[in-house]
Image (cartoon, rainbow, N blue to C red; front, side):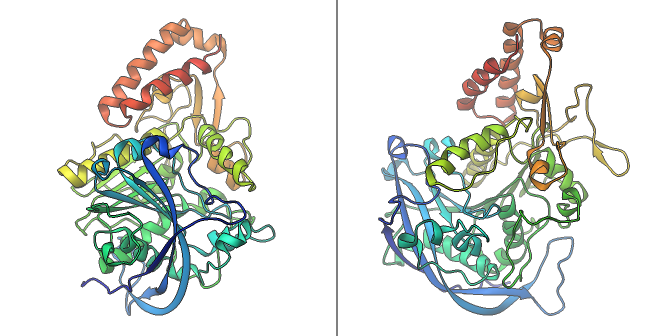
Amino acid sequence: MSPAVTERPLVTGPITGGSKAWPFAASTLDVAAYGYTEAEYLLQGTATRYRLAPGAQLTRDGHWRVEPAGEETFRTRMLVYRPDNAARFNGTVVLTWNNVSVGYDLFSAESLELFEGGYALACLTTQKVGIEGLQPMPQGLAAWDPTRYGTLSIPSDDYSYDIYTQGARAVGRNRLRLPVDPLAGLDVQRVVAQGASQSAGRIGTYLNAVQPLSRAFDGFILTIYFGTGSALEVGDAVLNLYNASAVSPRDRLRGCNLLRDDLGVPVLVVNSELEAIACYPVRQPDTDTFRYWESAGTCHMSAQDTRQRQDKFIRDGVRALPLPDGMNRIPMLPLYDAALHHMQRWLTEGTPPPVQPKLGFAGDPADVARDEHGIAKGGIRLPQAAVPLAQNSAVPLADDIFSYLRGSCRPFTAEKLRALYGDKAAFLGKFAESAKCAVAAGVVLPRDVAGLLAEAGETWID
């Protein structure tokens, strides 16, 4: 297929002011201390929507053929983090598809791998809910700060795929033709697509259907991906997790299609135990251009991740999901940073991420095989799963969708800890050795070890 011609977007900014005087969901880090600038821009133009080409179907193999089906104007925002010193820039821009599952933009701009590794990060609002929010309590950008964001408009999520392409054009190699450069002259060599959860599903569709036309991205990172691409055409419909459904969460979130790996660009999927269950029917082998990681004992959300986000939600004054007792306590953040580190090496040195063991499944229908502690067998074993203080898993504490995403943590008793390890010092010694093994396996970066050890020490029960 020949690349599609996408209209070059108009970029204006950086924008400032508004009633809040800061960008929504901005990083909680002092980015200036890392030698970075935070700047927000408006992105506007005419976006194309897509439909299946004549005779095409959304087949299991992910080789989807689409064609343009109409155009509409849009106006959205893009929050950019870039190194101040061009010599520190590693040549890679990560373009995040902002997640809107809870009714407003979600993205992470707190990764130390990003800021210490010299990447640029662009966080793009691609979907209608990010601007308009969800009823009856809209918390989208336009409601949060009408002065700053009141002119933004995305007519339908049908246009999100081309808006994402235009975001890539705005930060990519040829952006210097634009009157305003969001990267301030940096020598961009690569643009990597990144999305988590709902956004990973949309990037899955982008990879299968739109990347063959646009050729806009040099690599793809999908995290906590449930194995099914999002719809191409939804009209006025928007995702709303708050709507009750008679269908169980496990049945709603079950993988249906593969991700194509025939486009000559690297694709890395990083899943917790929960998404590994969903993806089991469409689990695909590692290849020269595809890597698939599954992590034991983890879940879609963790208490640590949720607590970090709550600081941002409190600052921004939006409704935050509660932090209930008993939710999973093995964060995926170390894996995400390791994945980005490996993607950079893959793109610059041709060295793919290390192949990792897959989770064990057993029974009919297949479910996760578990050890004597109730922890999943196989898979990537972060130190908290390899040297456990608790039974962490994707097993939910209730039947609703949010419980399903939180998984569970059942701490071991002090008696069991003594039987397993003897005392705290012996436990920490084993934990440190496990962390060392995780670094050697390429799933934890050296900078994260001290934090893991400190948290393990604080979690020990005497």
